Amino acid sequence: MKIGAIAERLGTTVRTLRFYEEQGLVQPHRSPGGTRLYDEEDEARFSALLALTHLGFPLETLAALTRVRPGSRTGDEASREVASQLQA
Image (cartoon, rainbow, N blue to C red; front, side):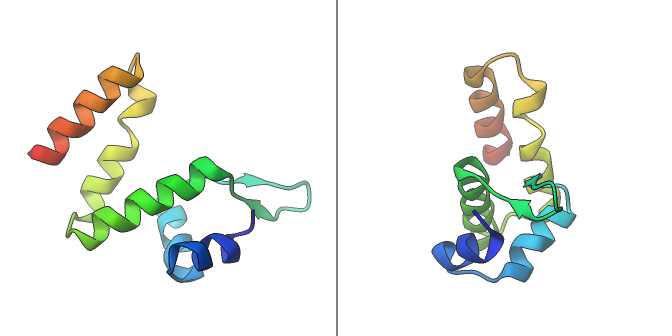
C-alpha cells in the first residue's frame, strides 16, 4: 500500500507519516524502483503512533516504545515493557 492510501485511511497527512519515518519510527519496504510500500503492520504502527501523539506523548517516548519489541525475547515481555513505559 502506498503512503497516500494509509494517510487517507488514518485521517492524517502524508507529511505526518513521512515525519514518523524520518524519525525512524517506521521502516517501510521499498519496491525495486524505490517506492515506499507499507503493509498492515506499518499501518497499525502509524495508527498507534498517531493515537499516542494525540494523547500528548512526546517523540522521545514514541521512539523508545518502537525499540521495545526488537529488544524483547517474547511478545509478552514486550507488552509488559510497553505497559511499564506508558505508566511511567
